[in-house]
Length: 360
Image 1: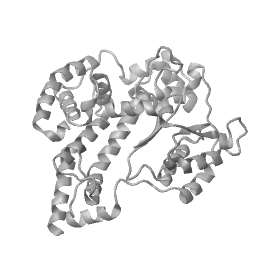
Image 2: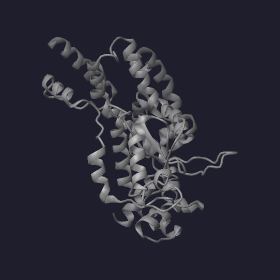
Image 3: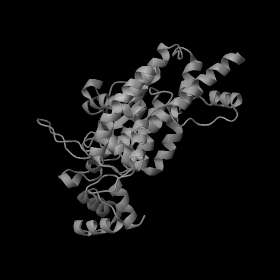
Image 4: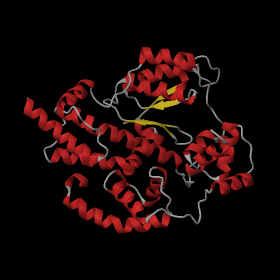
């Protein structure tokens, strides 16, 4: 990417001028001053104040779409970020706040008429609180699947964590062995078997404290939606057909939702908290630029040649749904289209179940 393209990307990600300068210097070997950066941004027409907003209609449409999906769980600041980053809209934060006050009451009234509107596995960096992976699959307790997430992440980041902490669940046994083997040849005080520790989940404060926030940022919508389907007799979690149909129809939307949540979290600014000795700032900046706040990068070198072999021998690629069920659906509905939103997913879910009743 050109210098201007990189600057545009970092600017749209919401980084400050100083953060952009540091990213350009450390990761792209581009050395410019803050003043020079401002001149480039002016030339590119990029600014954060006195912006020309997009049409009120387009902004309201996006807000309403979010209100009647997982966006119903988020506040106006997170909504403002989502409108900019997901919808590409130019809008002031104060405008979003005003629109939400007008829209929410109508959304509540609509929700009372439509019950379906009424009503994991992740890894987080201990220092920066950056979410390094967050995904959905048919299982979150198979060691081979968790190992796949772990090896894919270290391969992407080209590093090995100094130390991993997990709960006592057996699903982490392979990650433990892989982490210790990848750290075997390092010579620091936490190398080898010391590079993985286990304890009660309640003591793993970083990831445990995030689960409640994850629910508020979008998962509560899906939990309540599926509870409502069950209460109405449209979903039976003891029926394998119902479970597979639900995964097939909603899995891709939930995966996209989790990726949105992950990106938003990693871009937002964590404020300094009293009586807590944790760094404040944006998780992405704290993770990639620790030296900017006087911290040290503890990443360990990775033996990249070993990763593909380990993935082949010890992991299982996660799936959203059963492939046999997918082929069955394509026989029943040859011209099937991937649902683009919640309402289309509900319609497809009910259609598939009705067709299966006819042929069984």
